[in-house]
Every structure is written in C-alpha cells, then in structure tokens.
Length: 124
Image 1: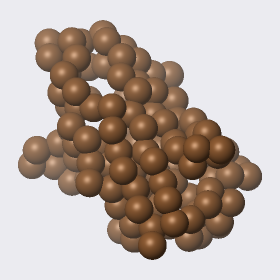
Image 2: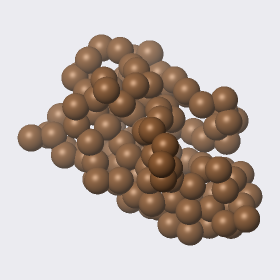
Image 3: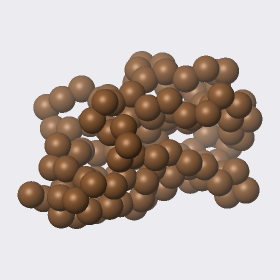
Image 4: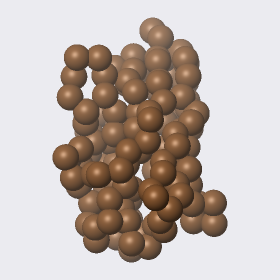
C-alpha cells in the first residue's frame, strides 16, 4: 500500500525558510514519480515540482524558481522541499503525491496517491 506522510510545515515570517519532508512507503522511487503540490484557500491545487529518478526535477511555478528545491534521500525513501525567501503568497497546504509512471506532470489529476498535507503559513 502506498503511503505518503508530509511534515515540516508551520508559521514563518516572510523571508524565512522551511523544509518540508515526505516520507514514502509501499513503493520505491525507481518506478514512481513524486510531486509536490500546494493549495491555497479558494484556489485550485497547483503543481510545485515533480521528481523522476532518472530525469531529475521539474519546477512548475515561475514564482518558486530559485527559491524552492526538491531533493530526495533514497535510503530513507523521503523527498524534501526546501523553501527559501518565503512570501505570504506561498501560504497554502502542501501535499506530496506519487504515481507509478515514467514521466512527471504538474497536474494534480495525474497523481493517484496523496499525503494528508502540511500547512505552511507565511506572515508579512
């Protein structure tokens, strides 16, 4: 059974940093792609990044480029999202997701397995 558990969210001031973690079980990164998504109140869930074990990471939001970095620790079956220079507009629930496909997507419709999410709140 695929399970994803996010952690690391919290309240941070603008300009601060957070590192989110997603502990995965029930599958390996060799045959699944892993994505980070976020959903702000009243908005659609949007893709933040997606990692493929061979082809690397794709980032989907212009606003995040240079500020967010996705990485993985295969020995721990965990992926991370390092978020720097946080802005109030980054406030959202952040989710990780997995899908057994050989390519990434920034669409939440693509992913079938989801974690419960972790709240990130950035104060101005």
